[in-house]
Amino acid sequence: MAVLGVCGLQWGDEGKAKVIDYIFNSGYRDPLSETDFRNPKVVARYQGGANAGHTIVTPAGIKIISHQIPSGITRQGVYNLSLPGVVLEPKRLVDEIRDFEKNGYPVTPDNFGIDGRASVTLLFHRTEDGWKGGRFGENRLGTTGNGIGPTYADRALRTGVTFAEFLDEDAFAEALRNNQEETGRKFDIAAYLDDYREARHALRPFLVDSCPMLIGSTSEPWILEGAQAVMLDVEWGSYPWTTASHPSRPPLSTDFRIGIAKAYTTRVGEGPFPTELGGETGDFLRERGGEYGATTGRPRRCGWLDANLLNYAVRVNQANGFSSIALTKLDVLSGLKEIKVCVDYKDPTGNLVSIPMKRGDWKRVVPIYETFEGWSQDISGVRRFEDLPIQAQHYVRQIQFRADEPISLISVGPKAEQTFAIQI
Ligand code: IMP
Image 1 (cartoon, protein in one colour):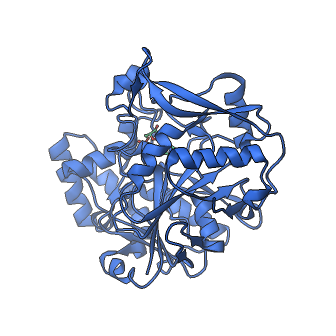
Image 2 (cartoon, rainbow, N blue to C red; image 1 turned 90 degrees about the horizontal axis):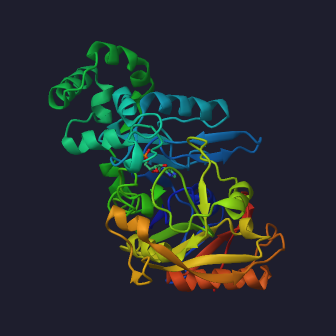
């Protein structure tokens, strides 16, 4: 039995689906315990909702963007599960299921299930989130506009609608009435019942109780797939510029953890980003790395790797089990004369400071950089650590040193075969 948790270590979009794809193809050898994890049978998402997005390229070259369905859905014999921690947008989920089916990947109760305790995102949640991220001015969050915060807020207030309630017309009506009474929201209950009827019908077969399956997890390898990343975690991230859930807290104890980090840093939406680069180098990373959001299409903000935050995220992610880092998109840095890495923060007077806990402090931190010599070679064809240019090897070793955790995988391009295992 083995449970492997996969979580982003920065502000999301690190390439989690790509690493999961690699694990399906090649397995994973944990560098510390020297134990293997192979042939996952279940991929379970434990938080987040339609705010996540990963791109799947079919063998026919068609791009499908999956937001709510776990990333094992294109694999034969793999069961995909949405655990109680997720929030689901029903109509978009139906569209997503149809999109997969249209492209030759049937989504049926045999390969997909949703725990009845998951919460449902409704139209009023999305309206309140505001298409462009809700709040304005200094406090603007730049959310994905998918109603994620309002849905989790309703859950915490105990005024939300569970997936099981959503599917049962009477229970749905009762939950909506309760929501109106408790929150004072104004909406037409009859219109909601009508409007979601088709989605209820389409999603009914996917209702499951995952509790007995968790017991089953003792005999089969599971991947617990996190959406977003540690720095977007509402507890451990750059609060309040975070999402509303807990990417760094999988609900089952894990035997292994892989934290994913890009070889540089990106962020979408508002919020602190000490190593952000404007100008030419920022544009270089955005264009070379194709840094545009899979969910909103927004250009991602780009900057140098923040190894100070990476070290913090590794500690947060390491709660239990063996863990290592998958370092993605190393190829994007090829061609830069020099590459910087933030190794610490100081305040404007030059004193070293730790990871901020107050929103104002985030704006005052100044990164302290270490500078590395770049490399000019195209490394997208490299498949062994020893074949990387010596400067790239040095860069990877220094990241491992700063993060204080083994790097087990490197990716040098978007294709599955461009990810390889290393041991350094
Ligand atoms: P929300 O999750 O839509 O409420 O957005 C809150 C913050 O998290 C915003 O800065 C979003 O851009 C960011 N965010 C949410 N999901 C993702 C993701 O999958 N990748 C990157 N950023 C995300």
